[in-house]
Length: 258
Image (tube, rainbow, N blue to C red; front, top):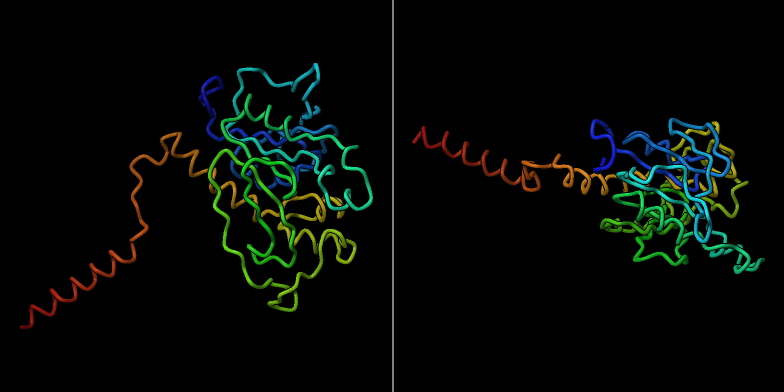
């Protein structure tokens, strides 16, 4: 945790906003203490729910968080209705608010690092786009992530790992979420099926593999900043060095018989 907070805190402090159910906190709670902000936060996981509106832009109130608190990581899910494909087909995008600036304001004030998630067409800054194909999942589920740290996109896989084996086509999508059960969606996105509604798991929950990937990259930055990585041995060429050592040892033993 950064200066201005209790330095005896052993785990990172993570802020999770726009998260009534906070499904992603199932993953985030494995890596730190999570405070979860939502208008109607549910008691669904190990995170600490806070009832508040994270859409603070042009409003007279802020979050019920002290000004000197600094989170190590902030994860934000501002509502995507303004840019969702379904809105452009059967609705008016201008009727939906842009909550991304609020996420940035909170991130700047309270967080050392941040992740802001939305649909790819949303106005994020230099986002990294992840999809199910990259992680061998039988759904496309493309999402964009604005981050304060570098996130290289993993390579795109040519096929999905579906129920029937490898395939070039996804089994279904969140547009047709009723085709599969809540348990199926939970298994695909790697979350427990209870206590989350199927509609939320299928349409709103970010697949856990995405979160693990982003958190791993954040942890590399966090550990460097905290000095945890000081003196770390570089093992990138470990196998090559061991092969050379074994060959040298074998040749030395052969020399003894000459």
